[in-house]
Length: 73
Image (cartoon, rainbow, N blue to C red):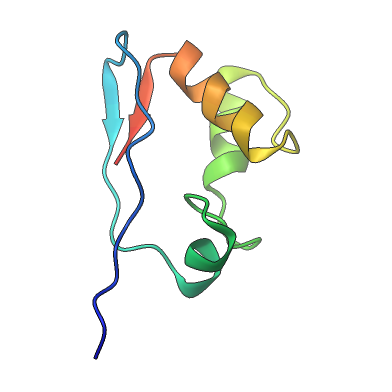
């Protein structure tokens, strides 16, 4: 059995909200993205809360979280 490693945190110096998750799914690991499975509602919910397009590329979605003080780990 091989060890599964998660991702580096998404965070900035102004983070005031931290979202803690479990180990990434196989899909997330394959894509190298937090909440990467298409059926996961995380990015849709975050986009509604913080007013950005959930169809941004992964880098853009991460930047939107950091701009809004949200960290993911």
